[in-house]
Amino acid sequence: MLSARKLFSGWQGTVLVAVTYVYFLIFAQFAFLGRLASWQLHPLALKAVMASMVVGGILFSLVAPRLETLWPPRCLMRAGFCLSSVAAFLSMLHLKLAMAVLLGFLAGAGVALLTVTLATHVREWTDGNGSLVRIGFGTGLGYLISNYPPLFNASASVQALVSGLFCLLAMAVTLTRMDSDTLDAGKEQPALSPSRAVLFFGVLIWLDSAAFYIIQHTGAYKAATWQGGRHLYMIGLLHFLAAILAGMVLRRSNPLILFSAAFSCLAIACLFLQQDSLRATATIFYPVGVSLYSVALVAWPSLLSGAANGRERGRIAARLYAIGGWVGSALGIGMAEHLGQVPAVFLLLTGIVIFSPVILWIMRRRSRELIGVAGMLCVAAMLRHSMGSTRKKPDEDAAVRGRQVYISEGCIHCHSQYVRPGSQDVLLWGPEQSTAYVHRQHPPLIGNRRQGPDLSTVGARRSPLWLRMHFIDPPSVSNDSVMPSFAVLFHDQRGEDLIAYLSSLKASDERLSRERLTWKPAQDALAHADARNGQQLYYRFCATCHEADGRARMAWQNSFPHLPPNLLHGQLIHMKDAKSLLALQSQLAQIAKFGIPGTDMPGHETMSDCDIASIAKWIAQQRAQAFSQARGL
Image (cartoon, rainbow, N blue to C red; front, side, top):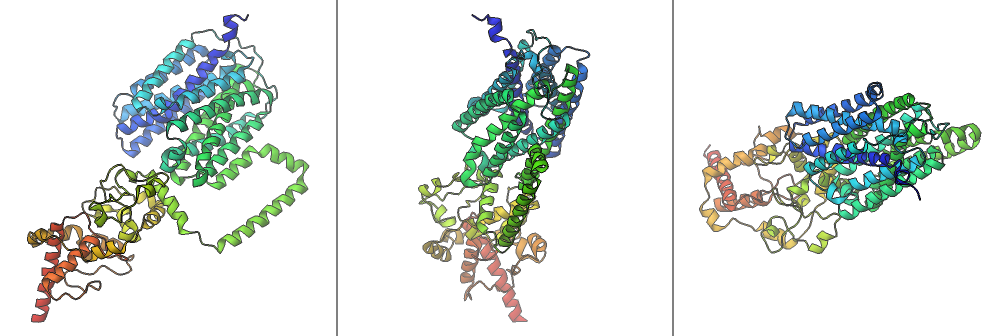
């Protein structure tokens, strides 16, 4: 029988790899950001904290190998876990900006010291024989723990506490003996030079970071791929199995095969995310691709680079994590934050980098065939372009994208899309929709609460121009609006896509239309109508468009198909001739309540009957007075 020492020899490295991944995934990517959000920092301050984390990560990645001249690897690992646990525990406090910046630097430094030192000496922790499989097991275990639903869905404080405790556990593991540095380095002839390895890992991390950011910040993507216990268990299991497979492949095959497989899985996931029908399938490819290259990332400096000694392995690990890891991750997040997707051009360029060894081999030995294939692809691309240029992209595509923007921007938290049957909702927002129709949506957008109006049929009640004005400057068209400005969405296509989606939300009901056209304020509201109150309401809600110097009118005067008329003495082309002051007041009240369909005139559905009647009364009196003065002249 094997002795206990021999049976468990090398598995300390598995634990260290697993804990390092848990800390990075749970704390650095989720808990730390969650705690920053709870401190309500200014966006620029938040960027400063994240920048300090990147600076700490890059600096200590480069410094870590030099520190080995002062302290042995076990001490550096212990210091890394200590820094990481301190950062996790401190994040549970409420910190000011200066301390938050320092905490970010501390978290980055801890992660860098851990990853570089571990990657440099992982073969000594894993006992050489079977090291790649043990690294794969540790990587997969780290991802499996991180996707455990109770931990993944826990509050940021709980995640920080658990991450810190895991680091303390790992510190105890570092107290055990490391094997000597005389083990077989594995691959004597590296598949890639150090600089090309940094490039390969860098573009994979760039792609992974962009895809992860997009998934986590796009509600439709996250709902289809990452939310719910079933999804999380499946993702964790796929990570675990793919990581073990990666260790076995690296042990027996050329690492370039693993790079190619990892890129292919990530690229397929990015493409599938953009298709509603294939989005759930991306859940399979994304975790597999991540785990495949993650195992190689840990193992490369010590076992696959062909480095002759520990000093050389340290230099390789430092460059790999500083440039490929931290810089690649920052570039990926930056691209996703500004573009909202992984561009096809980027996937193409990344594919060229990853498959460059194969491409070079073909260019050397199959140049004529390559020229022929390239020519055929060029002809096909030109034909596709010529056919596509004559076909306008359907509006439905913009509406589909706009629905994703609606979800990702959190509109569901303040607006419902559900008309309550048998209630006043039917008159204001209707017609009502069946629950079966609502549940056929993916996901349903019933809404969490109704701070703003229901949007079930907003496309029938608000024009695209009004929606645009409201998104960019809400108070300019709705004086009491508490909605924040979404002007940033119009820096790219997202704003227009959101308008296309909301404009598509229409429903026709002739009975309801007739009821609105014949609507009048309640008799009690008419009796209590106050012209002085109506004057104040007019200048709060109506003057912005109907006065010559109105805020919305001045800003958008070149966008109105027809400038809104002056309500006090201008021509009202959408009103019938009123033979009495009461009839004029009734028509004005109906328009003020429900707007004029097909124009930029909105309704004020949530305004009380008394306020509507007061506005209509004051406008009617002013018009009657202006008419009398004109006749007197």
